[in-house]
Length: 363
Image (tube, rainbow, N blue to C red; front, side, top):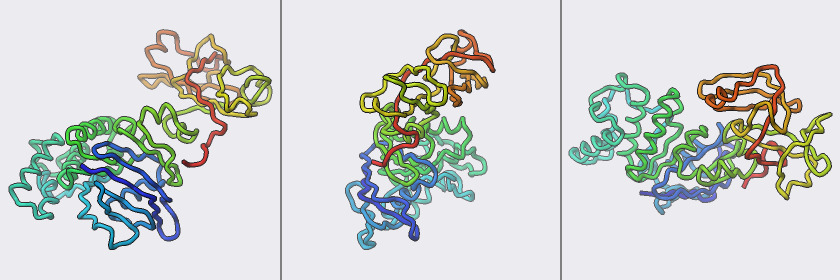
């Protein structure tokens, strides 16, 4: 297998810097997600790793071997980097059968026929496509075509696979199925996987560790998904990792109240010591961490009620600001669904506090 090290990488297109002095280390045999908004440089980083984009500065190592450098004579050609790649659009050749699609990279590398056939059939079995060897891509579903692309990447490299938004074109049910397939495939083979995505749910579900990039391509935080989700370093990461509410508060005496004219009712919260002197701050919470009912320490007003099957979502006016509240459907049916255009009471848990709503400086 092969770990990957990005060391002080800078990449630009013309005069525009896309990635600026980025450093990351991916451990051997882990599934590492690179997560960030569109146009933050994720795909550019992948292209540099695979050898499709040159570096302005820095180095890339795969398995301890230098493969990418500003000095072209030190860089390794893409076909010699031993990296399997799966793209967003599958890139499955429509005129080749499943077997021929998977066999082709081995043929190009002049692997002996019998060995190539054995490896291709094994890869097809690994992605649960045994029995489909003679099918053409037009006879396959989107999820099956993506499995073919995964098998082709497996025969291209048994060390490192790079997946660039590989399931974003699939429907919701197939996306959920494929993310577990990819994780299970990585566990069975032990291959190092770098998964590039803007989808927080996918990254949280499959990654052993993840790195979050901001809009400017800076690394904001690296860690295991549970820790990043529970302990985001700043408000921008909190906002990016799922639906969130940011409730503005103003200091009132020794405590805080909802910000806004006439909003003097105390807001029950335990503000961290380092923020207690702030004149203004934001209480951040997830919609599922708010309870709505007839009793509670904070008064609100229910504007909209939406039934989404497994949960209810409420839009609640709080101090002149609309927030989102989500409640499990079974609980809502048991306790009673709040009615629209009626006052309500709110309780909060798992509040986090920030001095701003947009995020601080990059790490």
